[in-house]
Image 1 (cartoon, rainbow, N blue to C red):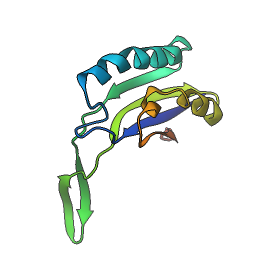
Image 2 (cartoon, one colour):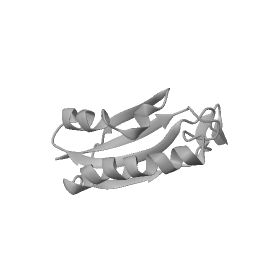
Image 3 (cartoon, rainbow, N blue to C red):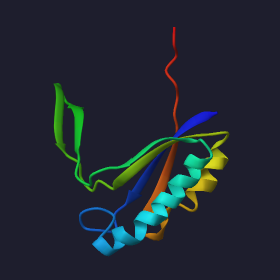
Image 4 (cartoon, one colour):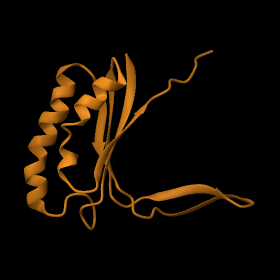
Amino acid sequence: MKEYLLLFRNSAGDEGYLSTTQDMATDMPLWQAWIGGIAMQGKLVSTAPVEFAGSLVFKYGGENTAHKEADNVMVSGYLICKADSLAEVQEWSKSCPILKYPNSSVEIRPLVPFPIN
């Protein structure tokens, strides 16, 4: 089984993807059921929401590193799971609660294990 990283992206709200406390109250059971379905199969590795604000650290010109606040950060959470195929993860992602919001997506990235020598 391979591991996959799912990044949940949405820019529907001003300060995150949920614009009201009512959205949060409505969405929590949907997220719990969706993530629970993956966990019940024994395929959940980890998951968490992330704060809307963030920073970037990067090399700039001759300087070793610089940092700045990330512009238009849209990542609202992540999930790492195990699956037999990318197609399986794509199928789960079609019912992800984030997709009910405009400008939302689930980005799926296969994880590559570091070689052990």
